[in-house]
Image (cartoon, rainbow, N blue to C red; front, side, top):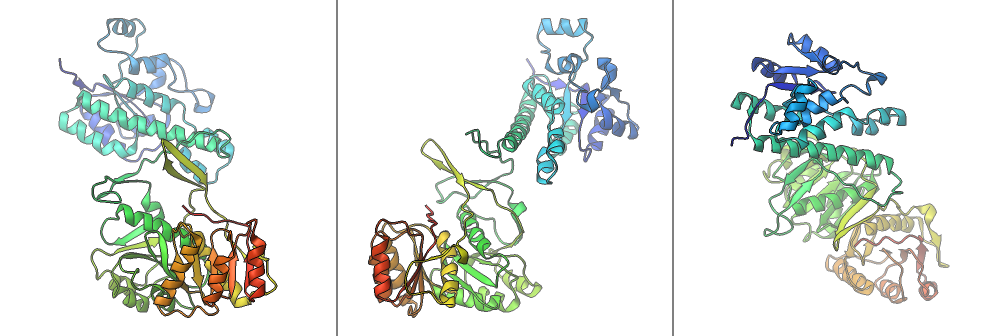
Length: 510
């Protein structure tokens, strides 16, 4: 038995009328009876098309300032009745309920209203009741009804009307039902998260309706997907599609450079989510040159990011390097022309955007959620722990190093001199190993560590790290403190004229 249905009637009630006219005209051409309410009813009439007001069906006006319009048995009976059920068919006749074959509804813009900074009263008024109920009813009864729940689906529905002359299959209706429940579940998640902004209810609702299939995951044998609205953060100017690993590096780059927003020109080069080069200078060209000098080997295939416009001179230097992604708030026209010379090189303009206040990652058979690490070490946070006081230049370098350290995989040690990353030890199981790795790396690129500073993401359990650093020429240290053996580390620094400050804030990054 065929499950195909011919559309003979439609209920249309939408907040936004964009793109609706072609559908209404097509339904009219196919002699479909159209029911509607309020502004949508007027819109259809203005097109010169016959429309039956819902009030004529329910014998009840729109009440309570429009809060109650379609919530009526004659409307929901028309949607929810089972056309192959004898009892339902009889009741439809007894109660004079018209059959509804199509429901076209969108929802009040709740998320946009929240994002606009509107008052709580305005936000509450944008919690849709009738619309969400119509969507759920029509999607539930996909056996007989097709539900169009978003303007994003208008073109597909219009094509379906034209292609099949108003006839729908059960597969068609089920596909639109899935889209409808995607809309309704996302909407309810947004409302819950608004009411639960303080996380007083320990429940996690994440809903992303923008999805992208990636070429693969971390490795070619793994599938990969990105769920999020990339275009909210970036304008892509050039290059191939971003990969799973590209996206992780871009995320790390943006979070790191966010620490230097509005400051003097800064340039970072990242590889595997860690900075392998970073410098801050009077101009972006010199910042790039000195960032690259930090590790020209690791920079190959890296992700580059600047906190200010990339100019022609900088672009000419970058163009000689193989790199995957270049990110900046803007590019000069000359710079853009140069950098587009490599067809696969991805060029992104970073927009001025706020980031989520929580971070989420899978763990065991669930997820871990935490507050974003919004703490950045400042001069006013520093507590001088040693007799030797850091110089102003050392203080500037200590803060600079601390910002990089915060965004580097633990255990980590970061070495800086004159606002240039000399080297870092990243992701080591021992802090001593991280320090030795950093020193070896810095020396291999001919950095003179005399007068350099050291940052650690967590406290030193023993004085061995400051001793090793002192022998390498490092003269100032920044660390959280908090070890029961802090005094041993302080004593070594005092005996060897090493300045040390404590922040009181650990910056683990696992």
